[in-house]
Length: 84
Image 1 (spheres, helix red, strand yellow):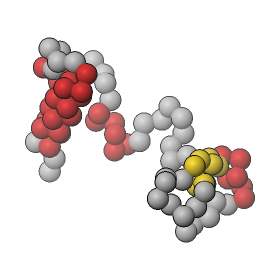
Image 2 (spheres, helix red, strand yellow; image 1 turned 120 degrees about the vertical axis):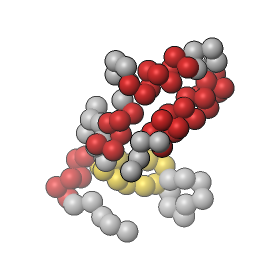
Image 3 (tube, one colour; image 1 turned 135 degrees about the vertical axis):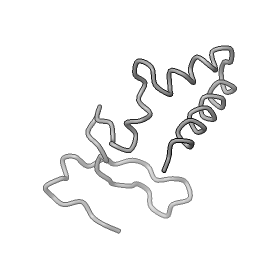
Image 4 (tube, one colour; image 1 turned 60 degrees about the horizontal axis):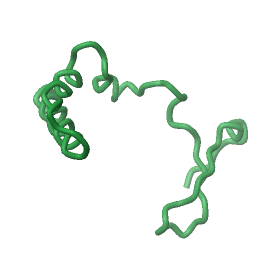
């Protein structure tokens, strides 16, 4: 298991481990700075127009879990068709 360098100790995050873990807590650093969007998620940002806005319009008649499932399906279909 990799460790955290002492220089990064101030940025460490301590949290309770998952129930099936043999450790009481886990220690890690932030993957990305707060508010930053990782490059691989840029295509999923809600911006004027684009796939998320299109899917939001298509699923406006649904609510709750049904809308979440419909949005996921819509985004997967649109994004999946554009992959190389």
